[in-house]
Image (cartoon, rainbow, N blue to C red; front, side, top):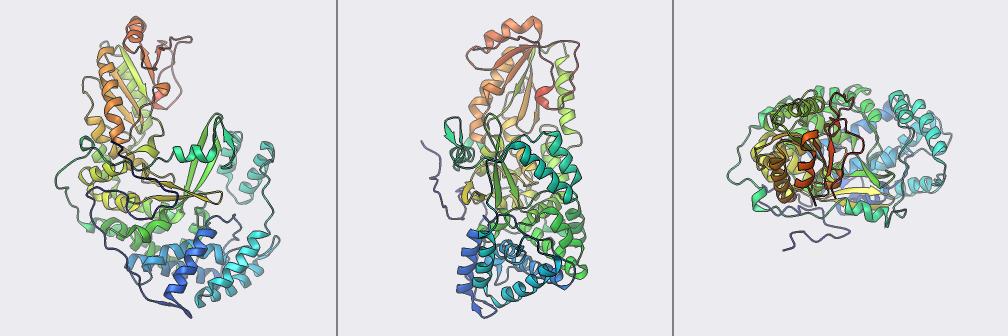
Length: 547
């Protein structure tokens, strides 16, 4: 039986999770007037601009101090407040908040100065208030059309030099140094580039699979426990301000990066306070009320970048900074609940030194006399393949306080914008979401508990280890590969190692014959400086590989 939903290029942004998730109140077509424009005309124009502006190249100038910057901050605040309070503007509030920076902050020409920017802002803000979106789009489109064309054939060294200079000019010293330490690895790929036998577009679509319905054995049944919404009362303007100051990263579809959002939340006095308060109200609503996904989807959309992994393609998602600020504020309230739910079973739920603890636990367990081998497992496309239906159902039982936020975030497809096209994320988590790792941690708990307890398990996200006798490890591996796919966990034999003690290597090769799992011997007395769970062991050169 084919359990996948039909995947189309332009799905409706309505829930594709057919399970028994709680209902939400559908947003109605409210009647309002925006300046001199009626609601129907304004919504139609806004939809058109949104579909175009999210693909525009980055050409936004820095928000100036003074009344112009304060006015922009106030308008953003009103839009987030409209969503938070469910006003007549709710259906278009977050979409308007995404489009607003593109229309107001377009740099008019290459060498424009601050005074030019202020004049542009004053003119454009009036056009925005009057509802003259047609004129705004005409102006911004003319600017975009005359931007210098990107030369995708520029050498890697030139790209590296230019990126380093831009980061240093913006005061992002750490990011610039990190760029140099990585030696500029990971060239940007275009959708039509060919990697191996497939285009980048085909590879990206394969890494974002269709939604799968949950199987009975992967879901928890019954009546989930409830939580009192009062626990989110601590999300206030002060917390949002503090969170914005600790948020870093590039801009999502709206074009506003973390640096810009820090200024919006801190530099315009009462307007900044009101914006923080509006974001806090939006966060509280997302945590305590099931909202219409058609209203919230602009906040969840991401820019998608394809990097050359050499070999392969690495998709990088860049979400909205406002979403990251909201999610971090929510996480500050629910972190303890998430860690309690994960316990010591999953060490990626925000525990202090989780990676180091996992690696240390594997090494110490391996030293025991009754341990014959350790199986180090990795999963294929793990975070993009997690079964959303099973996850959202189970989290209501395992960690109720975070469940409403995650259901609002993941019950509908997420738009990923790349090179003028849209790819949809229907399974797993989306990159750029601070709640992605906690969600994955809690989602894998039922799978881990369903595996045999005859081995010692250590998990950090999708990296798993099983230690014990070779026979028990093989039974555990068979159960994982049979049960894992129903949870969206697909163990990858090609990236899985069986590390056996010298005296048990022959038995290990025989037990895992035909599994495509690599079998190695452990070099005793050596130390490892790596911190990843799967790099806890120095391996003997020339170890045997099982065919």
